[in-house]
Length: 256
Image 1: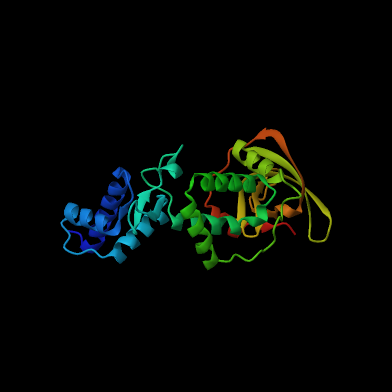
Image 2 (image 1 turned 90 degrees about the vertical axis):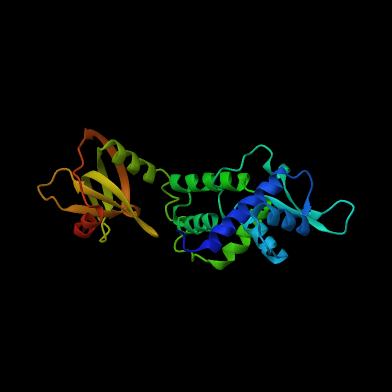
């Protein structure tokens, strides 16, 4: 049997609350909702404070509820904002405030990719989310974001090479060898023929993990993609060996 019956009762109460609001033709004041919930669930006690907390929870989960005046009375009532639902349907598992905050923090952590295809994908997803969310939830998101601050490590770090990440990821996916030229720490240019395996993200840096295509040494190499000057895919393909990525990174030789 479940240990935390109070939590189960809370879920039942919130689901019943949403059902009442979804089927109501007019805003329902606190007392009307409390009475209906008591009757439906057999509750002996339910405070207005608990009701408001449940309504706030629904809003934070993406359900557009409004607290508006009730007709012909000096009361406030709750209603499901059907205008906010126009043209969209709330999914069975709506996006919650916690998920949105986590996404926005992740977006801020990825700001060094501004100007690249990764940032295009992030911004496209953000736009879709914001367009589909009710205004009440977006307002709560703005307030919740004040909790976290991601310090700018190196914004737009890869903007000058917007297609490099795309080219490298395509070579990894297609298992193509690449001719790469990269700057060494001494400022010299090194030419390499590589079998790319992964793009390793260590914020704010991205490094290419690869094996040398024309070397008897099986040691993997790691190259900061900021140091890559050219990356040209070859017609030659290869079968990547099964690897433990974390172990391979530890074994890798960094470009000197």
